[in-house]
Amino acid sequence: MKKLLYITLFFAAITACKNNPKDDPSKIIEQPAVPAYKQLSPEFNGDTAFAYVVAQCNFGPRVPSTNGHKLCADYLIKELKKYAEKVEINGAPLKTFDGKTHQCKNIIGSFNLQATKRVMLCAHWDTRPFADQDEKDKDKPIDGANDGGSGVGVLLEIARQLKQKPTEIGIDIILFDLEDYGQPGESELEQMEDSYCIGSQYWAKNRHVKNYMPAYGILLDMVGAPDAQFVKEKGSMEFAPTIVEKVWAMGNKLGYTNFIAEENNGIIDDHYYLNTIAKIPVIDIIEYTKDKGVGDHFSHTWHTHNDNIKNISKFTLKNVGQVVMEVIYNEK
Ligand code: AHN
Ligand code: ZN
Image (cartoon, rainbow, N blue to C red):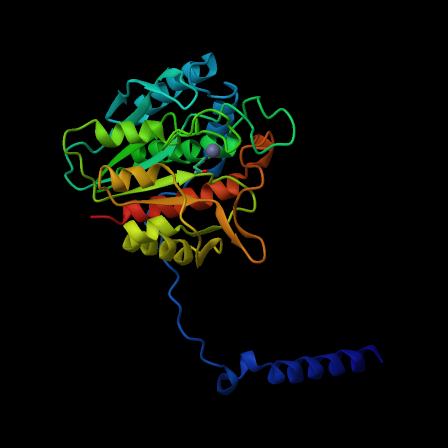
């Protein structure tokens, strides 16, 4: 009886094989050959980038003229010196909307100094002195894990990678100070024009190298939220459309679905002054999402006390970092 069962199973198996289109060449449907994109850049480490964000947050808020700001500047300089060929500070005492004066420290790390073709990668490292978008403790400074910390975290990881494997072109990493000391909407003080991006405005007028003119620049701002989406920022599309398209196409090639083919409204960020004052084509990769029915908005933690390390994703950091790296390692 058992023998019969085995024989039945044997024939059943053969029949099953015959019916499987995989085993019948005439039934195989030709799949179009999609060559997998071969990544040229080294693997960006999201854990390391995240650790760089943690390290910054551990200094407390990096508000200009505070101890946390000073200690973080020292840390960023020390870290960049491990990887860059040259590190320099650019800045001066500069005034903010509240009449105070702060020593501005734009921190610059240069790689492959002899290369004439250069790309600048930038982010701001200072954090906002208040939480004007929060419901409570509006007058207390924020951690700025995303708004400040994330862009710098990604750039420090790129710096570490550049030391291990240089790009063909030259790279300048510029960490801008005094970006986020902008006048709050509800401020009763006299309105100050261009109160945000004071460090980059200074740098645009006083570049670290005379007539410094990279091929283009990429600014990273708020690139660490778990659900971040990156749409094409309007100003970047006006000033440097080919760079936006190059970066977004690379995002898609690498399979990152959060580089969205939609445009939002333009925003005033460091890139605006780099484009208008220094005439350098710079794009902004910033979480400023086009939300159907809601309109454009920043991350929900923006300028609130929820902008802390709990709301940072190492995957988003890697996602953005890998796209930027793949773009610069492909430049010749
Ligand atoms: C304005 O709100 C005008 N610009 C936003 C620039 C910014 C602030 N990026 C980060 N924090
Ligand atoms: Zn901000």
